[in-house]
Each structure stands twice: as C-alpha cells, then as structure tokens.
Length: 255
Image 1 (cartoon, rainbow, N blue to C red):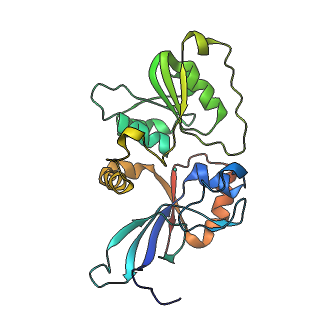
Image 2 (cartoon, one colour):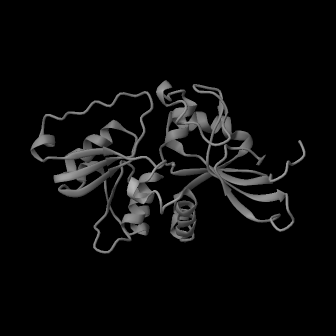
C-alpha cells in the first residue's frame, strides 16, 4: 500500500450498503450508453458497461492520517472496498409519515412489509388493495407494473413521481384510460439534484448532515435485511441480480 499524500486519509471500511436497484443494473450491464458519464460514482474504477468497481455508501473508521482524526467514524461515497481513501421507497414512506396530517400507505407485493410499514407509522396494502384517489404517489419499485398501479390509484389532478431507474429497459404504459381525464402529472425525480430554488441553501454537505441526523432513529435499522462478507460479494451480486425477494438494504461486512 502506498504512503499517504498530503491531505489524504486511510479509511478502514466497517460496512457498506448495496443500492440494490442501481447496482444490480450495473452488475447486469444495463446502464444505457447515454448515461455512462452521469452514472459514474465517486472513485469508480473501470468503464461501463463493465467491469467496474462500483458503490457509494461506505461507513468506516479513519485508520491513518492526522492524529486528531484517527479513530473517527466516517461515511464516504466510495465503491465497496476494505480500505480506501437503495430502500428508497420505504425511506420516503417513513419520512412522509412524519408530516402532520399526512395519510401514508406503503404498497408492496411482499406481505412481510406490513410489519415494517407499521413500525414506520404507515398503512400497508398489496397493489390490488391499494386505496385510490391519492393526492401524491411516489413510485420506487423499479417494476413497470408498479408504475401502472401508481397511475391507477392517483386522484384527480394528482402527481405521480417516478423514482425508479430502469436502465436499458423500455417501460410500456397504457395512457388511453383515465390518464387524461383525471389530468394526471407524471414527473421524474433523482437524488443527484435539488430544485433550483433550494440549491443555494441546500448544499450536498447540508443534505448529508440532515440524512445522517435522521438515521439516528433506530427504526431505520429495520431496513437492514442481511449482511454478507466482502469476500462473497461477487456471488451475492449474482443472487441479487436474479431475485431481490426479501431484500431491502443488504450490507457488506468487512473484517
């Protein structure tokens, strides 16, 4: 291992989180060529479609550097790696449920999510039992069928926010029914930017600080659905790419 340069730290990873939706698309080589530059993560090695070193959620401890920083716990946007220098829909539901007067329903094909919804203060329903006439629908399942459900349960002049990213997949939508008569709005959202009117005040540093403060609530520990040793990461990604049943935020453990 090379010596540290001025201003560098050596960080020993303790755990990293797999962003299941995005990282399985990367693993399968389904990042569209038009997005190769935008989808680069900090410190990525390799080029799309692959092989690439990817990931952007690592928690670790400063192992070497200035004495006053050694031993500090840190969070880094860095690929899965033992030393260096997701869950979205459920998180949104949990945060929205904290708004006074908000009636939030978490919709999922997995019935086991009902317990999690209750812990987050939300109602739960499978797609076929979802309440209609919703004022706002946020879709994050990554499945085209989920977007069809989102449009179906939206109320008059409601907004459907699409947070899923489909990679190279084409998503067919039947817009000949109530889409126009109900005057629905379908808009995209992505975590890489905030609305222009808030960008000056909500810097990346401020947004990360707020996110970390919210994560102090132990209820969010329920999103951690399993852990795997770093050495088994190649086999794990193959399994997640084939099926994500029962998986929320899977973590990678480092010795």
